[in-house]
Amino acid sequence: MTKPIIEIVDDAGALAELAADWLLALARLKEGIFSVALSGGSTPRRLYQLLASTPRRDLFPWDRTVWFWGDERFVPHDDPASNYRMVNEAMLALVPVPPANVHPMPTEGIAPDAAASVYERTLKQFYGADELAANKLLFDVVLLGLGTNGHTASLFPGMAVLQERRRWVGVMTDPQAGTRLTLTYPALESSRETAFLVAGEDKRAVLRQILDGDMSLPAARLRPQGTLRFFVDRAAAGDGRA
Image 1 (spheres, rainbow, N blue to C red):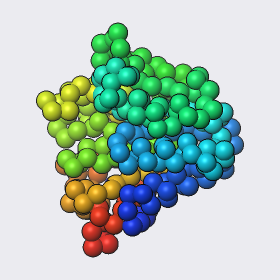
Image 2 (cartoon, helix red, strand yellow; image 1 turned 90 degrees about the horizontal axis):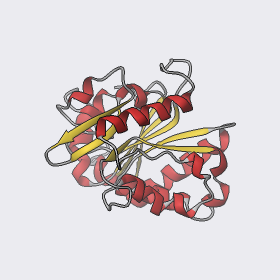
Image 3 (cartoon, one colour; image 1 turned 30 degrees about the horizontal axis):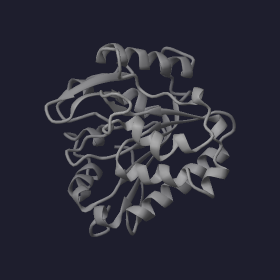
Image 4 (cartoon, one colour; image 1 turned 90 degrees about the vertical axis):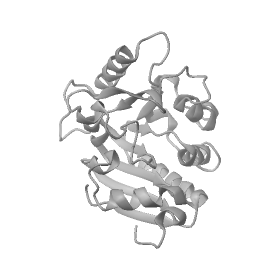
């Protein structure tokens, strides 16, 4: 794994505050289009709620920020399990973002493989090319969570999508997690800034494994082209060695 920058804060609330200020600063510093790949989960939800609240709401450049999703459960957008629904309710429906700037993964009236192809075309149209280049990054920011099994986005252990290096979007089906769309490593790695948001004591063991480079875990295999960060709360950091 790329040597990461690790920032430890007291609790999940402080983590969300730190991440919100960091994302706001990046967005304001960037000239032109600012592109973000979003993560689902309870910790990112706090971040999104903070961005949608004053004073950050009034400072964020909504008109030039383009939103994508790192992964999505293959359920309708109004389903309680939908990552799109969570982000929309926590942030996007509450801020002046142009609808054309929001790109949810398609999950209705289409088969999973076809949906992955459609989303890949959306990304390529935004990127302006069919092949990713080292000197031109797809995203300014990729936000990621960390599962207790070491997954990130919907790159789960043992799944074929982990081996994909050509496609930008893949499909994963797990007996417990169900069918999901996910960006693949090449797309996730094409980012100027990549940030894992890790909160809770239940993440302590897997975080240590990731930082120790356990390559059996999907999150440890990520090789971002830009800066890699971990925003961690004290419960996940444990003894502070994170």
